[in-house]
Amino acid sequence: MKIPEKTQKLLNEQFYNELYAAHVYFAISACLKHSPYQGMSKWMQLQAKEEMEHAMKIYGYLIERGAKFAVDSVKKPEKSDFSSPLEAFKTAYEHEQLVSAQIERIYETANGEKDWVSADFISWFMKEQVEEEKNTYAFVRALEYAGEDKVLIMDIDKWAGNRSE
Ligand SMILES: [Fe+2]
Ligand SMILES: [Fe+2]
Image 1 (cartoon, rainbow, N blue to C red):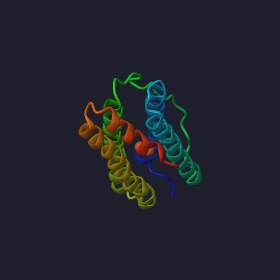
Image 2: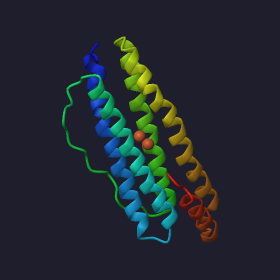
Image 3: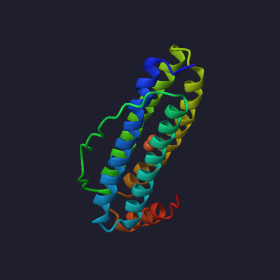
Image 4: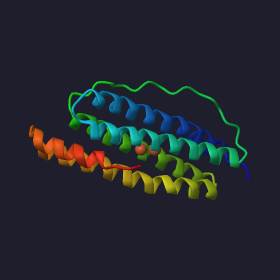
């Protein structure tokens, strides 16, 4: 069975949404690179890579199911300057919430079109979003707690820099 029309369109869009998410993380990473917070910059760069892997996963699935892949452009991130690590992680957390809504819409649409395979495929992303919201929010919470305390912020930076993949 071919992927039904609406589900296919949304999956195709999600490929670009994931690339857009990578752009958002690259923008944050690049901004933090010009700050003392090298650990958080690294964290954001690794997250950009993960978002590109999400795009690859969707691309692979579309091709596997014989879908016609529609090329499109990736829009430019709204912001490239972040005044603090807290603002950077807040942006990331808010963006992850938006992506969760995009993913849930695909799940709902696939179920509506009785494309159980696509619903099963996208359920991996739903679980992934729980992780991504949790991870970005953990930094928001820690940075809010740290406030203006530079020593604490540097500790959080070390924590971020420990991320391996
Ligand atoms: Fe993603
Ligand atoms: Fe994400």
